[in-house]
Each structure stands twice: as structure tokens, then as C-alpha cells.
Image (cartoon, rainbow, N blue to C red; front, side, top):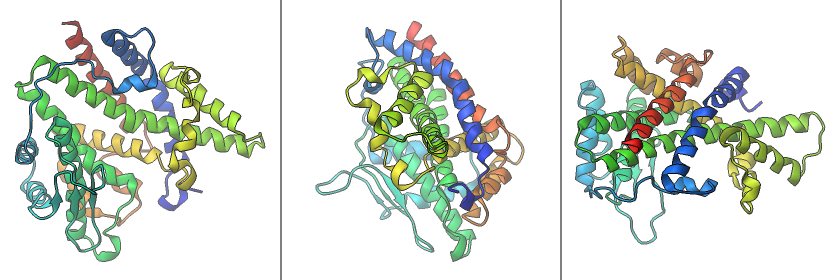
Length: 346
């Protein structure tokens, strides 16, 4: 029922879960690598917030530096895209610095036939640079959609919304890794953050998607839906996905109770994972120089909400009736893990 409005086949949902299971071995290897590098006897879920190295260059970036870094990273892209990128970050449309009473986080806000605006809380670190690239992606998407679509179809669904934002992140990561001016520790932190991004956006959201699937399946079978039965699902999934026993962490088995999407937007979180998969598949086609790849991507940005999202991404070269787009994330994860392991063993 929840997939029907956007014409999403149930097979896409189940394929996503299947591919996440295949990624489990490399995720577990990454956690073991983290445990060893951090010198921990026991690894807990909250240890994921620890950096693998304690020293970095601590380079400070001004907002101007961050903009120029982003613009440099997209220099090889078509002129129209670069024009919209500069328009997205035009003075007056970005609230940059933290302030008293200002909400936290970052987002790009857009309505029909208006210039999108970005809220940031820029703190001068590399993470802030990635956040800028991410939010610029949303605004670029809105500018393309508002320019090429009539009012009725300028809005787009979450299924495609995160494609433009994470596409910019993939590109910025590769740009930084190939520039050659990063210290070893900075490179380690950059790759760690990239892996952690995959785990939070693709892997963890798929775990939550499988949780919903199993919880509703339990209800359909007429089994008791209790605090204990719901918690047991989460405990088993953390073992399957991470080889972590969350019963050893006080309150962690109740993670299902504070994921608001489960209660207010059922069967929603999987879209974070599919958007990430789609953006990476599109980016890899662009990176490999597949003929027409970037042109097809721009057509997706221009399309707004003019068709069902699964049809829009198919025109951009991502066919979600197949497993390939989802496997692209697993391949990226394996490559990043291999590079990180080599750096830590030097």
C-alpha cells in the first residue's frame, strides 16, 4: 500500500534487503578493523563515532574555500550544470554560519517557481565542505526542475531527491582522493567518513527497512506485536548486519521506538538507500565516461516530478528491476575498505 503511490515494485524493496545481506561480510570486516585500530576489547554501536586517527592536519576552510573546492570538483562537468551550481550558491540564498536561535543541521528549501534557499551551520571543517556540496545538489536539482517543468510537476519525491545531493558527495570524495595533497591521516579520516556515510545512508536504513518488513509480516500472520517481539527483531537484525549484540547496551534494543519514520511515515526509510544506490550508479557511469551518462543525469534533474520516480531514474541509466544499481554500493564499499586497510597497515 505504501509503495503503490509511487508505483514502486515490492521486488525493489526485497532486492534491497537481499543486497544488504551480501554486503554484511565487508561491514563486519570494517568493524573488526575499527576495533583493532582503536584498541578496543569490545565494540559497541556508539564506538562508530570514534575517529580512526587522533591527529589530522586540522585544516580550516572558509566558506569561500568550500565553495571554490566544490566548484573545482565539478569543473569537468557541462557548462549548464556549472551555471546552475553557481546560481545555487549565489549570495543571498545561503544562510551560512551558526547563530543564536538558529536551528541545527542543514537543508535546501524550495517551492514552485522560486529560487531555492540553503540553511547551513558551517564550522570550517571538511565535513562542512561535504555538507555544502550535498545541499548545493538539492538546490541544483530544484533549479533545473523549476526551469524546465511547469508548476504542477516541479516538485519531486524523496526517491529521487537524494540523488543529486549524494552525487555531489561521490564526486567531491574522488576529487579530494586524487588531488594528492592530503596527509595520510587526513586520507584515513576521509575514507572512514565515506564508509560511515555508506553505512548510515544505505546499510543502516536498509536494516530499518527490513525491520519494518518483518514487523508488518508478524502482524499479518496474527502473531503478538509486543514490546518484546519488536525488540527481538531489532536484536536479530543487528547480529545479522553487524555481528553486534545490542542487548549488552542499555536501551539499545528499543532503537525501533525512537525512529519516528516507523510511526509517521511507514515504509519510507528504504528510499534513502535507493537514492544513494541510484546516485552512485549514475556517478560511476559518468566517471567511466559512458556515452550520454551525464546528459541522462541532467535530464533526470530537469524532469522534476513529471513521471514515477522509478521511470525517471531508469531514463538516467539506473534500472531498479535489476540488482546492478544496488550492487554498485557494495562494490564502492569494498573498494574503500581495501584502501583504508592498506593505509592503516602502512
